[in-house]
Figure (cartoon, one colour):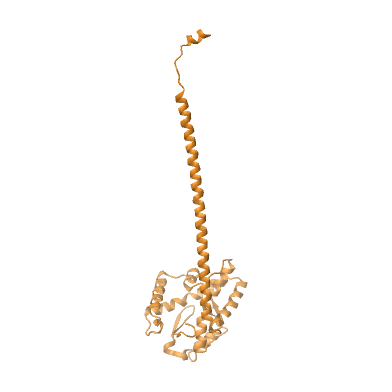
Amino acid sequence: LSRTGRLCLVQIASRTKAYLFDVIAIGEELFTAGGIGPLLESETILKVVHDCRQDSDALYWQFNVKLSNVFDTQVAYTAWREQKGIEVTIPVGLKTLLRTFSVTTLEEENLKASIKSQFQDNPKLWEQRPLSIEAITYAKFDIEHLLNVHNQFNKYLQPEAKKKVNAWTLQYLDEFRMDEQGPEKARARFAKMVEKVQAEREARAKEIAAQKGEEEKGKEKKNNLEQADGLEKRNEKESNSNMFNEFKFEPVDIRDIFDDV
């Protein structure tokens, strides 16, 4: 998306309803007379968004709307992990976020996977009209859980972490819209993060394999020692038995003994 991709749909959810606005049908009027622009720019109305960078870029450069007062759930997830002392890796996707902080059904996940697959095959999917029922349902699923996620973060994030979310979200809002190369830079950073994570996972896998190898060697050595010890005891027992068998008991007449005396 960003400034170069066509903005086709605006999805907004309240605590009770979800609204989908057709940007292709309504056009710029949606953000002026339609009142969506002032809402998105409002400093008093909080907008909960997952990864606001592309939305912020598209709204600003295509419709002159400066998205403001945002709580970004991707940023919040990073702050939450940092607060828990967990190493921050790659930015969290919406699917993982919702699995962690909200309740998604198998039906929702299957539908999202289906639409993503269709979008990969047809990049113009969201420009087609009318939108399929599947696409509309997908768009609704994308936003209806985010307010609940925001509530969860409000409970779990400590004051210092909340300050970080606010500061980092301001950076997110400007990262693409104030830098034409922002998306390209973000992709490059993401690729490096993925490469780092893969390298760490491979190193960890090798470490685990080495530990298992040492454990197997230890078990094998122990088994060999036990077998050798068992064989030694068995040989000793057989040797004692042979000595006993070799000792001859001959009948003796006790009178012969006394005669010798």
